[in-house]
Length: 430
Ligand code: SF4
Ligand code: SF4
Image (cartoon, rainbow, N blue to C red; front, side, top):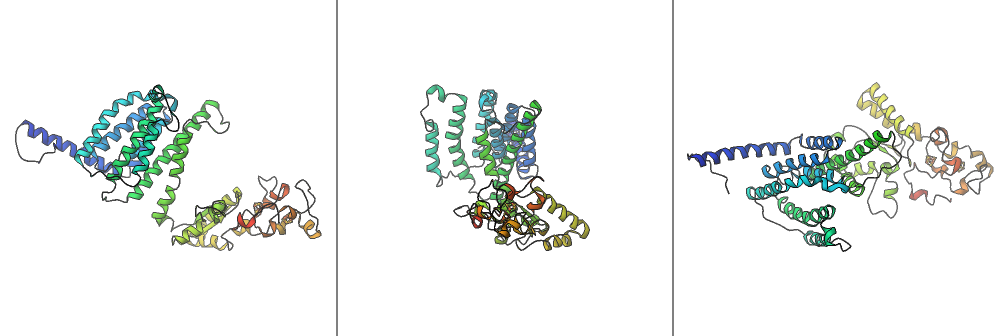
């Protein structure tokens, strides 16, 4: 290894070694400071966003590639280049059809390999293969052989095929061995948190890419006529779904902000578990209040259930809370909001009245006049499965979009109740 002992030897070679060593030490300190600084994610996101917005993904990949090379060569932590590397990958995936445009970036491959070798020469690790090694090796072999089908040699040499075979087939396995070996080393920060932050940043980057695609379509057409076709939709979905739980994970690990304010749980799933927690679910999903209780967090939860909740219930509750906080301060204002909740944590101004007792068909119910079909409009809907007697909300008066409400054309399915959907099923019989 060339790293010199800083002896006092004179002569040109010794002076050159000392200069190079000082230069490398400075680069290395700068790389470590950048990796551990608050600027790390904002800088990477800004670089990605700027090149994506300018429509210059090739230059963007090159810029991120240079950052990867710098961090790989100068930062002892192998996790540091991961985020810019995947942001570059994410940017190139938006151009599936024109991967040949990225050929100039191939010039970065030799310095990248040199930086990788340099990294392991300066900071050597013992190679380790974990339990996932065999499974990943099999997936790599399958990918190299062309996946579920057999591909010709010509097809195998196409840029898109190489993207998959070299990226997924070989790259994934190499990355796995490197990180499996490296991440077992002790470090001064919380590794799980750092991983979650990296996934959050990648999710944000992908969300930005999708937003920009919609923005560009809007600028070009003057309107957005439905869901946009994105060639990288599968990749985008994978990244977004992987990133989605990370903010919750980070919130749970850093509870300070959760402990100082109230939480609004919007929709029946967030409030009580709803459909994801219904019978047969294996997700262990639960409502926000139950989850905070389980984690020992005493933050008050305001539930705004409904499937979906009326926008007025959401905006009205926020406006009510802001008004009370303005009048009485944070603590007393929130205490007053909490005093306006029913036993299920719902604001009484919106959920305080029973649907059945306020239904225009109540007279028909009392007379025993029941509709047998949805098109019969002059009878109570109880026989059709209406759950109004056990449901609380003000849709009968507020109406959806100010036009009509659930019972007018169908039935109440009790969507604002903690027992929804299991306790309200079957929907169409009583
Ligand atoms: S339609 Fe439903 S809510 Fe209305 S009176 Fe009949 S049972 Fe009650
Ligand atoms: S009337 Fe029934 S179904 Fe309609 S919003 Fe209220 S609880 Fe939900």
